[in-house]
Image (cartoon, rainbow, N blue to C red):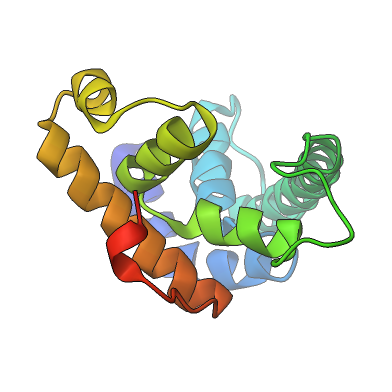
Amino acid sequence: MTPQLLGQLIDDHAAALTLFARQWCAAPEDVVQEAFVKLSAQRPLPNDPVGWLFRVVRNGASSAARADRRRQRHETGAAAHRPAWFAATENAAIDGTDAAAALETLAIEEREVVVAHLWGGLTFEQIGQLAGVSSSTAHRRYLKALSTLRERLRVPCPNPSTLD
């Protein structure tokens, strides 16, 4: 196959092949690209390169969709087996699942400070050393994280000066 013929096939059919693959998979461009790579390696060239491309794209898109479903099942199963952040108690002021979800929405720098301080018992000086920032920066991140958590969990703070 000459580079000119391959380029002409790409120009003429890549968009239609991408639309065709989109019916089955989430990454149709990857499937189409792989089909053109396979076509360029074919010796001898298929009698009907366009028909061949559509067949290869359909098969590749179906395979990609199956792989996506397998990965989704695996990720869902792995997430279900992940230990909970909080143990459920009957008299809890907030729901542990909601709190865990709110924690996961924090920036990693803020979440790190909250977990290290509240559950790890580290001082802001220790957290600053751990994170490579000053203790005052660690404290500011902590205050910002608590404010964000209160807002997301809709929990009022009666006395903001007692946040540490």
